[in-house]
Every structure is written in C-alpha cells, then in structure tokens.
Length: 126
Length: 107
View 1 (cartoon, rainbow over the protein chains, first blue to last red):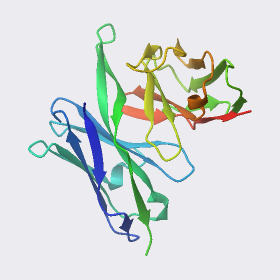
View 2 (view 1 turned 30 degrees about the vertical axis):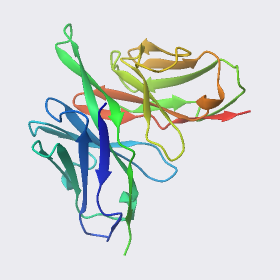
View 3 (view 1 turned 60 degrees about the horizontal axis):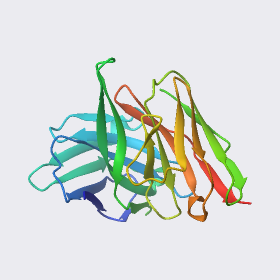
View 4 (view 1 turned 90 degrees about the vertical axis):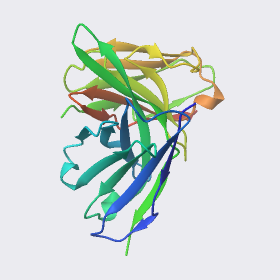
C-alpha cells in the first residue's frame, strides 16, 4: 500500500526558509494531487497547499505569498518551501495524498485525503 | 473562504454510548465533506468521505450524514479505541478547510 514519509530539518531559524520533502513509496506519484498540512502543538489542522504530479498547484490564500511546492516524478517525491518563517510556523508538518471523485452532475472533482505521512516536527527558533 | 464550525469542542461519553458530532459550513459545499480521527502523536486517519461514504477498513459503527451546510458524524456504540479528536474537512474551489476539532473524552 502507498506510504508517505516526510523529511527535512527539524530546526529552522527565523526569517529563513523551511524546506521539506515527502517521499512516496508503494505506488506512483503520477496522476494524483499531493497536499501539505500542518498542526501547531495542541491546535487544529491547517491545509498549506497541494501539487499535482504535472506540477499544477493550489495554495492556501493565507500562506500563498510564502509557499512554493514542487514535484520530482523520477524520485517519487514532492516538496514544500515556506519562506520568511517565524515562530508561528512551528508545527508538525504532514504530507498526504488527495483522492479525487468525479461528480458528473456538477462537472467537477471532489477531493479528500486518504493517505497521510506520519508527520515531521519543525521548530522555528534561533 | 469557507469556514467550518464543529460542535461540541469537547464531548465526554462512556463506552457503549451513541455520540454525534456536528459540522457546519459557512456556505453550501454539496456533500464535499470528510471526517478524520486523530489520536495523540499520530497523523489523522480518514473515516468518512463525500459526507456519508465509509472508508475501507473503518468500522461500521461510524457513519456520516448531511449535505449543503450541515453534517454529522455518528458513532453508534463507543469503543475504547474511539476516544480521540475528530475533524471535519471541506473541499471547494481547489481549497480545503478543516473544522477546529472535537475532542471525545472518556466520562
């Protein structure tokens, strides 16, 4: 079955760039959207954005100015960069697979997250 | 942006109880709602998608209903493994929003 694994530095200095990678195993990264979600300690879930295997992206408007996502299909990986970080960006960061369901009557896809990585903790501190 | 409001924020119940969690959307989202269960230190786990479709492998005591702006997650008979935090999530216009979560505690 498909498994996801987040990796990257656990400590980032304020004003620097947070960089994380999610490696997909047990399946292909192709033809899916892949999301990043974060969760500050003791708080709820916040969707950061997603990327399709073709490179198409959608970002949370509240983070859009600081977020860049990329995909490397040859490595079955996708990545997140979050610039100008502050202590407010300290959180557990999860990657997830978006599964799509076609709604013909609405001529649109509905998506939800069916596979999640275990998460990686990123602390922003000097 | 579509806002999702869950109620209650905390729910105390006993093993064997039937419990219901409500999620309200700030505008209609058709049936584009999912429910997740999260245990401490773990990633969320998908329970329900498209408002009422049970994810494979999820016990049948979990069920979801609703469409438009009001949705419910029901656990028909609480088991010890069900004490966790539950989140609803909407998808609309290429974006997701989560509810703030409902913590289900042992009474």
